[in-house]
Image 1: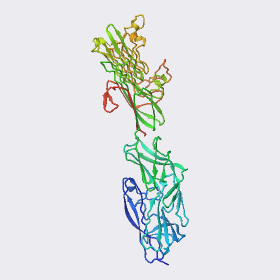
Image 2: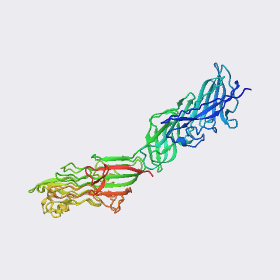
Image 3: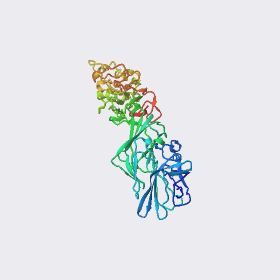
Image 4: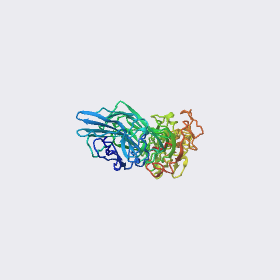
Length: 613
């Protein structure tokens, strides 16, 4: 019987990562030869992994895990399988048929179960090796003279998705007495996920899913795959990962081992949070064998809303807590005065994915305009008497968040669904008789809108108007002049002509109100309109569901019969926490960063994701 010899097998793991770098360590590995008299030594070389991937430090060494193979995970405790065909001209014989190669710790050699010998001169040997020796979810078929084929179904559990490597060495001389290299290659694409540099919405990620992925196919040991294009499935993993930038979601044993494929248009990933909320994103491209595809996922959930003159809808993408901020619009300004500044409201609220909310962002009327700002600003007016022209400009629109949609900002059913309102400022005025004086416009609230002021020569506040409150609109303070100037008619203060209301500012009606006056700003309740241009109108009040001091409307209310519950909580039961309400006369956050004293210009709104925990 001939002497048994070792065959050197060089195992090169052809992993391509973002930065590929390999080094080797060597073991001794034996196969048995038969017609030669000297033993041949074979080395097994496996690369160490270098780069920024966590695989390098992973200590798991079980064949039932998906850890990509490194020098630390293909040791002498492992086994692999081998097939060998002897080629004699046009005749093929299978000498080794899917035998296990293991390490003999006594003889310090790698050996097959049975003894096998080199066939001698004029013959060659084709080798086909695979690791691990036993492949779950796959079947290797082989006929002498053909390349083996592995029929494989990717298991649903990523921790059992084995990193299979194969090697082929053909036409090796039957009288070989030198080393015979077997270069192993990965047959799968490795897919991993990490949190990107800008992070993810705050919370704990508890699941990651690959959707609509090809998972069946046939692998030929010549290195080609034929996927079953009709079979797709999803692969999910349970994890517990914070959303800090750079955190690894899946690596090491949690690496997805996928059949190489070109992703279809329906392929996507889904991230699941501890509260059950999910985010889904389409993915595209081609996954090739032997490559690691590291997805760095980032998402910032935030949306801003400028004035557009229309309703703006927003659908909640993820269950969680959101911070909502609203800035009311400034009132209109006449030639020599500034309109009242808008108020500010903020709060955090728990919202479910798929919920649609509606932002109505108030308008700052243009200079000298008499037309009220969109979303409830009162109309101004211009009228002259013997003392000359007096012009009171329009009120600013409120900015609010609603649960019920209506194209008409003054639709009552929509208005009563408001759960946050930032009051708008009133308009200012110009009067010819007091060229150096104008009405000081009331700013948006606060729980109450700010009253207007009068800096006319006599400082008389009778010509100003009050701000809106939690239960009623503001009104003129003029208690001595009559409608149309006719003492046979009602007093203007009792007529309702200048009074603000639920969602709208008071309007000055010109001659009926005696003289042109400044209009009220819109709000939860709007401010009243003044009776003179030198008397400022009132600002609109603000509202936040759950905010102390607020008084929510009863759900049964109608436009002609409004009742209040006495509670700050809106009938929808949506409640804000960590709330803040700032009147337009005080320092507040600016939409562009930093602070401002009262909000100038058009209204503004912003929603920002806070946490999924």
